[in-house]
Length: 489
Image 1 (cartoon, helix red, strand yellow):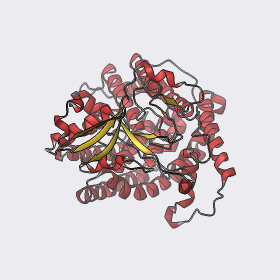
Image 2: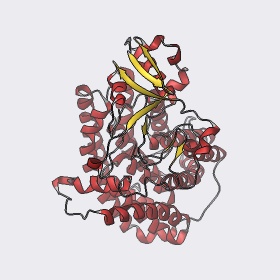
Image 3: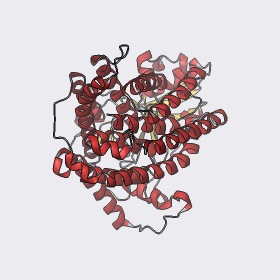
């Protein structure tokens, strides 16, 4: 149990640092700083009570930060909800309630849920990639990720010697699908579980070069598949002399990162700026973390033969959460939203009556159809909306209301960049957000070929302010018009 708590606290540190900015005001900034301190403390002294405090604080922060919660941030929030319900069920919040028995009971409730959640995440990761865009070497996210790897310089070591070309791109596509299928299948059976863990560490070690927070989160979930003896040796949570080495390392890294995060947030408020400064730091921290964890897993390799069997099923709250995660992954195909549905960087394009998926038809979008109608922006005084009025590969990234973060295909120089259209709900949210700050929005736009123009979009009857819960939790993204499955966030 404490192995998971330590790895989870470290994952929270990575996630908090990667988006540490001044968005949300002074109270949210104070919450981020407090959450960083709590996560650092729990990483040093893992225990049930500490995890509960961290989960409650992080969950409140996620709600305050909505709607800019990323894909694995949704999974983190679900884990926190299930864990807090489990803590209430075992009496962990009572005075003196977090004893050894309560921790063991809580872990017995959480372990099946964590295992199933990881399987659901991998399931959707593979299913979403079964589309024409991902399988095309020119458009595939696998191709762009390999290109990013070859262009990176970890610890100033160039990787441009890695091979490139169509053959390598096809290999990267096939390897991604095979590995993301093999990891959950290997973890399912006792005889192959340790090989699945090793494969996951290698694969997410590579992904961690670009997405260290995501990989750190996945590694925490792997603790649910480790037997207690191996987990303790891999994370040094047993009470021995080795723990005296881990504690100053974790505490020092957390304190150093916190100081840098606060300093950077004071100078650069946009989230994109926070990501830009934090990624090099986190990438190098993650590489050290990878080496340390990998060496310890190898040292505990023989203990993995003791890995427990399937065990009991999930607690009721875990079973409900499984259903919720399964439904979240299906949202793009039902016409609800493409972001925060575990479809990140999959080249999936299912919107406006189109589907590039090999199995799921476009007709499924009519079940809810919450992304229609699509609006074409012709001009605006808002720079974020104005960016959508012209063709481009990246659209207009904006994490508060909607996001695109498109990546050009490999042969972008020979192609025309796409134009972008925005779901009406996303446009309404953007206009309402600016109006709440006292900003007027001049806007020219088209819907189904009909042109509109307004000097103050907040007064436009078509752009009425959305309901509060939609502004807080709904996050549609812009759609590239005519792109063949663009690699998007």
